[in-house]
Every structure is written in structure tokens, then in C-alpha cells.
Length: 352
Image (cartoon, rainbow, N blue to C red):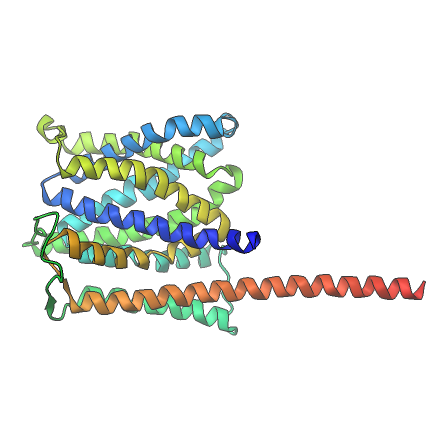
């Protein structure tokens, strides 16, 4: 019974992680709509995450921190730049130049980019002759189809079912075609960066096995990197001032829950189940975001977003089924090997 519960922990952790990230999308969207600079916002959230993680890391993993080599520190620093500083800054700017819907669709491209890099770097193996391999490939194709539907088909506008909303902000309208193209390019680069970041997490965790140390190291590194980027782009002191508003709430939420808890759970799931398993749960993020938008914002969704969300859920279950099927076959193979070994031993003893 206990073993069965332990085997389900990565599933619960991955879904909780995506729920936390959905909260990030909703609160960040409200913050950007209120006029918060995306680069300054990202620096503040990483700084809050660093402050929150520092005492926890010292208390629980001080020995692992002390044993880090220069090579480990360099890996963590480069990973922070790839997945956090570049990936999420590009994502935030891409959403600003396009729309939140397209941003959510781009975020759900991460399973595709992760699977691509995992296959290229031989972290993930696929046997298309087996049902498990076909399910994984089919899930990825469903994911691509769902993203395409969300991106290119809007359909009729569906008004929110709920008439009471917490935030009375509107999505920023993109008036420039040049900005739209730039935003789409940034979202694509963000998906590629985060997909590669997921795969390289395995490389980092091989020499630095503590997910907490890796999370703190990447958060601290990205806070320094993002400060350099933010101060280079925005030097107006008024833009750096914080007040008791939605932007401050979003920064605190992202710093504590997303940067600290969410990223820790993400590293833990990657260590337990691999990068593709973690990345393929991202469609759940979109589902929670769409539901949350009904209660938090006064604009609804388009029919295309609903259809795409259903396809993304199907892609999620398809890949998870394939992963589970592979694990069952692997366990059965190991059991057969053990049984054969026992039979050989018995035959030897009988002959004696």
C-alpha cells in the first residue's frame, strides 16, 4: 500500500506544480495589465524566491551546498540563464506583445520541445512498434493539434458564466503587426529554451542530486542576471517602486509559491520520472488558467480555446498512459528475469 502511494507521488507533485504555475499566469497577467514592467517584475519575483529559499536550503541541505564544485556552480548558473532569465523574460515580453491566450498556447508547446530535445540527446526512447510508444507519439501530435487550434482558430466568443470578478482589467490589444511577429518569435524561443532546460535538468541533477540546492542556486543566479537585464532596460526609479496592489501580490505569490515550491517540485519530479513526464503535464496548467479566468477576469474565452484545451487534456492522458505502460512492461521484464534466475537455481540444486 505504501509503495503504491509512493509511486503516485510524482503524479500529484506534477499536477500541483502546474496548478501553482497557473496561478502565476493569472496573477502575472493582472500585474502586466496594471502597467508593471515585465523585466522588473521578474527580478522582484526571483529576489523574493531567493530570500525565501535561503534559510530552507541552509537548514536542510547545507552539506550539499558545501560540496558543490566549480563545475556544478557553472552548470547551475547556465541553467538559470537558459530556463529562467532568458526563458521567462522572453515569455513575459511575448505575452505583452501578443495575447494571454497565445502565451498559454506557447507554454503548452513545452512538452513538444522537451520531447524533441530529450529524443535528440537520447534521454527519452520511443519504440513506435509498441502501444506505449504509439501512445506517446500520438499524445505529442494531439498536443501540437491543440496548440494549433488555440492559436489559429478563435471561433465565437463565450461569455464568462460568472458575473462577479476579482480583477476588472482588460487584455492589452496589440495594434502593431511588427509587435505581434516579435511576440510570437519570443514565445517560440521561450518554449525552446524551457524545453531544453527541462532536459538539461537531468544533467545537472546527476552531479548535484539535491533538488533544493539546484532550485536555490538557479533562483539566486537568475535574480542577479535578471537585475542586470532589468536595470539595463528600465532606469526610471518610478517604475521600480512597489505599492500595495496586485503587482505586489503577484510578486509575493510568484516568489514564494512559483519560484520556491513550484520549481522545487519540478526538479523533484524530473529526478523521479524524467523531463518528458514533467513537461507533458503542462496542459493541466492551461485548464486551470481557463477556469481561473472565469472567476478572476471579466473577459471570457473563445470556442477555439475550449476545443484546444480538450485536445491538450487528451494529449496529457495519452502520454501518461504510454509512460505507465512502459513502466509496467519494464517491471514485468525484471520480474521474469528474477523468476528465471530462481528456476535456474532450483534446477542446479535438484541436480546436486
